[in-house]
Image 1 (cartoon, helix red, strand yellow):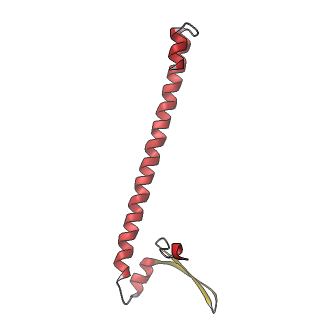
Image 2: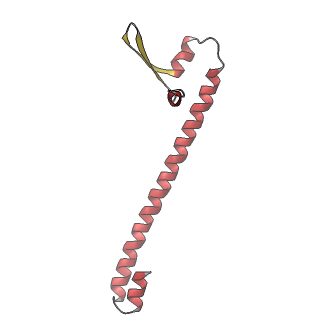
Image 3: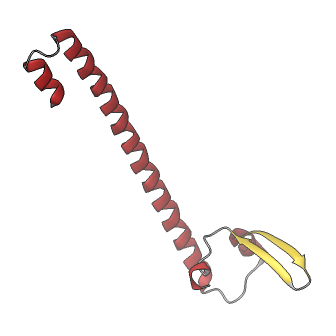
Length: 99
């Protein structure tokens, strides 16, 4: 609004007003694009999270796993020592909040 007031009050000429208005318009378009990109990324993350939860629910009730199902849910198993192993899941660690 200040830009228009400066133009209206004669503090800047028409060409400078148009130049600055165009620059602001370009900046606004860039901000809108970034907001849209962020919203799309958020939707994709939410969809992936929901998909992971649905997949995980399918496995929670299983009493016995076969090799194929284990490969679906386990990304990697690291053996650090005889008493310590680390399992990296293909899902978020649902127990991490309980630790």
